[in-house]
Length: 222
Image (cartoon, rainbow, N blue to C red):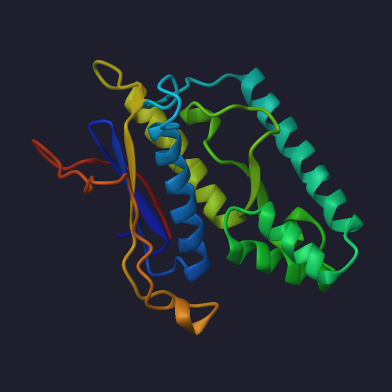
């Protein structure tokens, strides 16, 4: 087990495990990311045409350029909202509304008040809820602030899992479920968070067991 986390996949399901260096807030964000994937797969109960497995994208230079432009536009929009806020309380609410989870929004708002007002200074990046590599849109819509380390971890998971699945014989082009296995304790930003279990996944499904050998380990992070 890597100290920050690792990812494996079995069939068309991805299993992400946290390590002891993944803080409580990191775990909260990772849970929100995983819930977002499974919500995308489940679709809207009122729309039978929505949902379905996420489709792996082979990627292209043009797609990457579009994604980077969208992230820059989303950051500019977020920064303007924060600059135009009339009070610290309003800025905190804006930060929470535009973040992957409340804890990172609170961190951004606190750092903003202390004068750290760049993406690097805040240690966040604008993140697509569903990565482009896993079939998400490359548009500016739906981008939220995510802690840089969590964003880099999930970005590597998406790329390496997608690349490995596409190399299979035959290629596996769909992801049908994402699981996050993350039992307590964690390093808490708040004492009450230490013993929370942040594990999550699709309703009614347990993480799959490997069949015929070990699952492929796609990414380890220390």
